[in-house]
Image 1 (cartoon, rainbow, N blue to C red):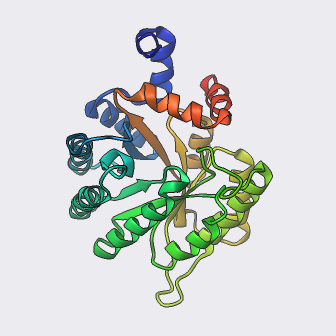
Image 2: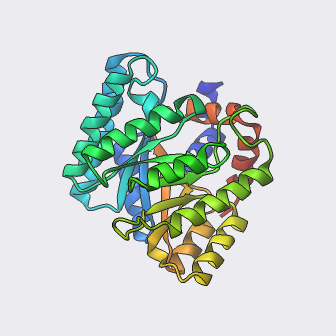
Length: 297
């Protein structure tokens, strides 16, 4: 099935719509094109759950190449990394060493590393590592919170209080009722509350806010944010909307034209097929999401 999908025209069309090619050069070319539209990017080398130290370092090497290329080409971009790509599953200390080197590199290049969030078993370890790296390299690392988790509100206050940048998403992994809201309406309500908190937060000691990413393709929520920003006279540059490459391109362009910051999450690499299969297997809703957006502009 993988061989057929990677060789077939429909497979190539699918990968071309949502994945920016197989190589570093491919994704940099896509990034330059996206930047020309006034849209920022975060680049994600596909591949997770590595099982050896050599694989972990190989994954990291790609990100170091990206950080150098972003700086050399003066791209409006940063990188996103999953901890399972750098050995978290079998050696957390190794993963932290690798991430530390990567964040230090980003700091030297005046860039930024987003530590992506995976399923709930990774949540606390991901947040804690982000905190430790942020203490060493402030403003060079951030992470992701998932609004469907009950703990997201507490984690929001925890990270905002340290000035750590957050990408807020709804959550794409299958989770149990013991850790996540089972009803979509409750997830949406929590998302809206959290996004409003993020864009209005001010540190009492410094008087500064925290630049966060509002990652959603839900147009109803986007409209709530636009109205909230307008009603409360919030600077449009105090946050950014974030979306997936190839999804709601019309909305990305409209928001950019209105003066909002927009960043697209651009995955690339030969591991696109297992990436899609894992996402589709994790939650049935992901199948409908991708199908719905496949034929949209």
